[in-house]
Length: 227
Image (tube, rainbow, N blue to C red; front, top):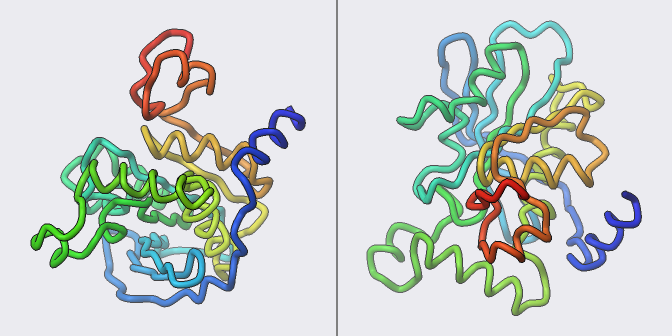
């Protein structure tokens, strides 16, 4: 397993430096039994992303921290809002469910979703690709720069940094949960980041050989039993 891990990481190339995330609280709102905080932090120089931090009302000391990664579903306007309980799809509100069980939960946007899309002005003017076309452009841009579009090296890992540094989180008790695309990210992150003590992966995973054999562009579309 170590040899496979080293080989895959070698193919992905070098990971960017992880500067201080410089976390900023943008807004705070009260919900039923917890507080929803909108955070902004740096992933890499010049790239700041947003995430919802869900904090239970009654916390006595440190508690486990969980990264809740949103699904794909082709809904680029919705990212972090799904697990944070702000979307119309209640089945995706798993971040809120974890918070209600006493965990501090962070729900970030993945690349190309919600606040990590081009601005509304750019989309309206048609000066940039949108939706699935923008997702394809971002993947192509990363490859042309000799890097990988995998979020494992950026957003989710930086979110773990934010969680581990939070005063209410036990850095030795951190987990990750995701569905579909979020499940794929959860699987990869738990595989190579030693800080993950527990992971729940719902859909979205496949063997690399199956991805090539089935000619799929995302593992969440792999329906073969061999996946």
